Image (cartoon, rainbow, N blue to C red):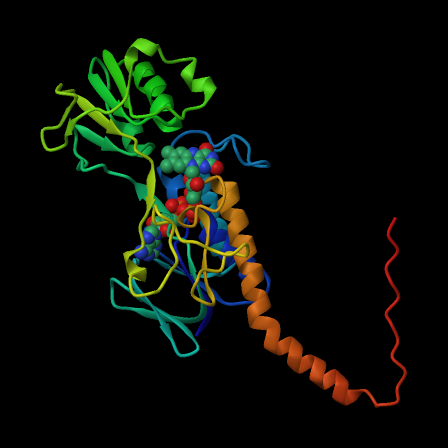
Length: 314
Ligand SMILES: Cc1cc2nc3c(=O)[nH]c(=O)nc-3n(C[C@H](O)[C@H](O)[C@H](O)COP(=O)(O)OP(=O)(O)OC[C@H]3O[C@@H](n4cnc5c(N)ncnc54)[C@H](O)[C@@H]3O)c2cc1C
């Protein structure tokens, strides 16, 4: 039995596993992809948002996460998706698509999010979500509809324009993008308000485009937890206490699946640390109580109790 089974080896799950391992526990990561690093495997752009990480693309950040975890001999089941997580006597049992079962005293949901599809199906013409697929697509001379009003929509407008698109229109119900991007997009290329879509054609506002880019944000996806009584937000994200514990005791949720803080690598990694420390407290409680009993038994009843000298604070 492992101390923790961690579902998902992105920044959140990898960080949690690393901290648990360093604290003397046995975590096991189950990761659907063949490599750790999560969404950073889909990020070909420079990741400039992690203090101490310089001049690394998302791909390289993912590769570093992968290497770091493996160097610490953390048990990983790569290329295995968890299809079922259950509460069992003494902990949890995760079952993978390949039929393997992994039991552990605690469990950590770190399976992240997936792009909202809005009824569209990904194809050559329809691109869903930012990152690798956008990066690999050809936009030269094409007419492009970008659906969404957040940072991703506006940032990708700039990207698609640099890639030589002939005509680009952003369709946004509301606008939430940051100022830096707004300043680079001509207002004439933006439509605000409701717009009809026909995903099966595909068509947007009655027009067809060479490419439709769907950037509707992200949603949590955890069908493997359907039998657990998990408290979820209105949008389906897993609710947790401040130390990342879910409504099911000894089950933690970290990173984007919990949407506790601004989603990025650093906050996801921070969640991993918080959960690892909470798991440590839980798993060491008994050992501490047993040790305290032994100390009491070893101390004669009339022995004077000495306070340890207090450290000086400068
Ligand atoms: C294009 C792009 C660029 C980005 N750029 C930046 C940036 O520059 N800086 C930054 O800080 N953040 C960036 N982000 C966001 C950042 O990547 C995420 O916030 C972060 O990866 C979230 O970490 P996570 O561990 O919560 O989830 P994820 O990274 O999504 O990891 C979850 C993992 O769980 C696995 N999984 C899912 N379901 C299962 C299952 N059933 N069984 C087993 N495994 C499963 C997935 O395969 C995945 O590897 C970017 C994201 C994208 C898409």
